[in-house]
Image (tube, rainbow, N blue to C red; front, side):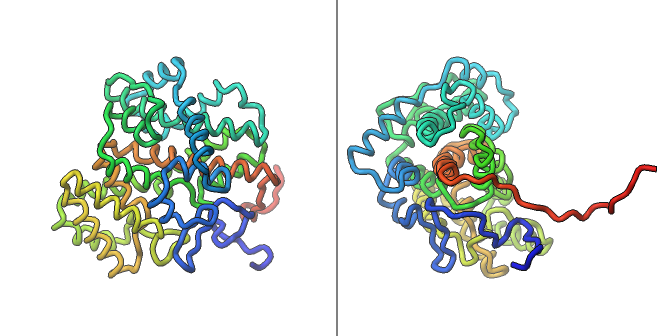
Length: 370
């Protein structure tokens, strides 16, 4: 890169090193700590992958048992936070309420100001365990329903369904949800992860870094895309209308959310796995319409623009079929990505340097007040 050259969006700029994950566009793969994410999704639980992302290795039975014990012991949220959640505006976007809930967790955490790697790991466990409880509490309270307390004898995914709906779906549906969390858990130096590293580089606390990640993830060009995909499905309504809908979007040069990726040019490597479980979920709920719409949109976009779907394209309708409100899709993304963000917070602290790029000034020339 030539000296002084501006790279808008930091495209192609290598800002730092990481051992957490690698996007490998040449072989169209994403790896966590060296493991292909599709293999992890098929063979591991979300808790195992969360441990891997944080610790660098997959856990043995004893390590997994201890990790699960710590997470389950920290699921409950305070009465104060529950009351705050109950008082959130029913019209507030769940990403805003999730951001506020995590910030409040920072107010209550006795180690918030202790900014060591050891303290941050313990705080990660608490944020990781409590955020799903806060999200589920908001999910129910805005519907006028009673908050359901977490259970310690359920897996991470089972417990989230329990807290949201008061029941646990089939093993097939729970597995599909688990897979979605694994696929969303980490993705190199994406916008929200870079935001958490920038905040961490100032030596701010981990809660502040996670809140920054949530703020970045809210945008429709990042995490909010899964919501926009579902809204597109609502506009299309029937498979017979899908092709004309997408062709009209292409003709008008409209932004089509759910397709394309900054890194992957030949298709998001996570999509085939998520699509497999999306179709399984649709089959379980006896929904043939959504997969048909998806296939028509995907085929048309590839044929007309050679642009492939990204992870948000299959995950949106999957979450909707499971019963989640559309505006809660991105908070579910948050629940998963807390693992990746926290791993990057810890990695940043191990060899920290304040992230402070330069800018090229293009404003008015130097002038004086007359």
